[in-house]
Image (cartoon, rainbow, N blue to C red; front, side, top):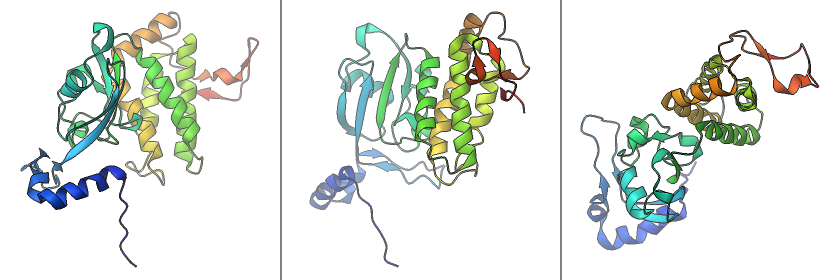
Length: 259
């Protein structure tokens, strides 16, 4: 019956400074509430951003909440390695999805990434991908991770993450179809707490990398499918899973694409 407070180290580290300098000092750092959004409490104080990926100086940097993603990359991480351009950025951990190069001016606060179509700021774990990085690899890595992490209790998460991985593996094997991107979106749009189909938020985290990668980089993914499957990319009929193909003979038990 007693209230419970869970504080992480980053939160506790701010307490001393707030006690010494006052709440107004703390509120002077960051972003005030949006007057047009009564649900926005603002994003106050500093934030630890862990920047990794294709940057010249990866590391953990303290910066005010609301700093533009572009500034975080260019000034703190000293830009993209080898003078290349940014293709995509994970703003706060894999589960938050991706920002495109056109969204680099997104403020890194509690509402900025959401307005850009991401799940949120998350942990502030920023991952930068340069112009040479294939988004199909991003999809594969994220689907593989969340399929492994799913505990299997909720059917939409257990089956959704597993089938998303199988579809992406088939695309990478050169047997992808354009309709597969729509199937992946159908999975991602229907798993998680937000659509109300799972108990915990892992499925939401699994969904956002899929949704943002496909909706923001669909052209690249379609080109990949057409290039790697020039004779079958336009097919729409159900297709067998790779796991059910053995030495050229195909099992008739499992197919992907039946809605």
